[in-house]
Amino acid sequence: MRLKVVHFLTPFLILGTALPSLPVLAQTNPLDRYRIHNHIDSYGNLDLRLTHYTAIPSPFEVKGNLDLSKSLVTKIDKGVVINGSLKAHNSALISVAPGVSIKGFADFLGSPLTYWPAGVMVGGYLNFTDTQLKSLPARLHVKGDLSIIRAPITELPNDLRVDGNLYLGGSSINTLPQTMSVSGSIFLGGNQIGVWPEELNLGGYVVQ
Image 1 (tube, helix red, strand yellow):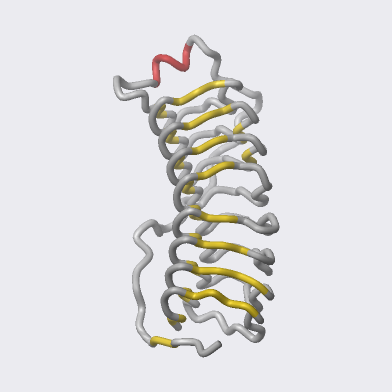
Image 2 (cartoon, rainbow, N blue to C red; image 1 turned 90 degrees about the vertical axis):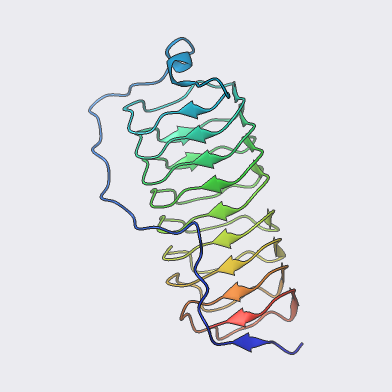
């Protein structure tokens, strides 16, 4: 196929600068089902920003958004349902278990997340900017933008499907999988791609 290459920069609106890592508590401090209601507003949003809780209860349903930014929560276990979006900027979050459901976007900017498993359901964009992400599951379908800017991941999964834009700048990606689909544009951000897909379904442009 013939690629359309455009030489201009478009900002990624959900980017930011990672803050220094959070202090680690000497002991765990899980949030129980009683105290959790102190952090839920009238819209059903659960706000745990800047808290020292290390875990949230499971199973548990959040009626709105969940904000873990700058918190010490390290994992989200199977059985957690988020009917809004998940924001975990510069948090201590390391893992999200298969079976977790997020109806909106999932934004892990600056968190130490290293692995994204199959079986996590997300209804919007995925932002792994400035994380420690090293792998994504095969046949991943992202229902929005996908950003791996400045993440150490070295390869993208085959049959990757991105319904929005794909942002690669500053990552370790220099080859693309044999088959992939991007409904929007691919923003290289200075990355040099040596191997392009044999089958690339691209709705937008390749932006240097």
